[in-house]
Image (tube, helix red, strand yellow):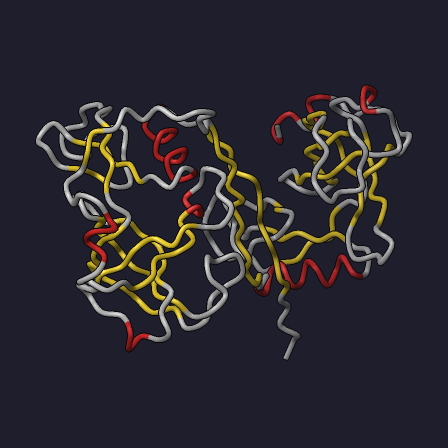
Length: 320
């Protein structure tokens, strides 16, 4: 039985967005230990605030301050926190309707166990020691004595607020990250095994007879299963390309460099790869290239010019 290949993969990037007046006031308020909602035209107070009424789509600007205490409307216990979650110890995900609000806010509750959590329990905000204008300025919620919190929490009704703060937060950067285990399947496993032998393979469709690289187990055009392996290349032709001027985090490649679509000889689908061994401004459509294998020899690190004459446009125009 062939070895089942797997590999851990991570996709991550910083997600940056600017804030309008409503979200800016909300996040700046959290920095100042103030929770703001927005009042709809029919009098409901939405927390967290939104810029448009979810029912009528009307623009909303009427801000209102709500209390830092509230009631759990529903919850779920998390026995094994993942990296970068709000608490390192087991906690409850909770929806909390803050006093003065008509909707619930999703956050976490610090509790000793699921036995200590129930729908309807009274909770209050535990503010983060250092606040920057983010939802994490609410460190978590914690249980509070329902008979002792009313005086300290202030009025239960939402109070009008102008949303004006010194040095308002105008944008946020949120790191997005996905960790998963990739299993390539039969077609790509055969392809990877061939790469380990410094061979590049594709699969021929039994219907249209086109050779696709890398193989996918089925023809992307006809949708029929493909099992016939075909060795292609190693030489190929640059069909299209782009010049990269932004250095990728953690990559040892100096900018600018060229990333190209390369039609390997014998293939009917262009793959992509980096072009090296030539100044970036000399890369061109029709350039003939060959692979330069990585140090461990398991895949091409980049492609370099072969020194052959450029390919005629008619030979690769169908692969653009």
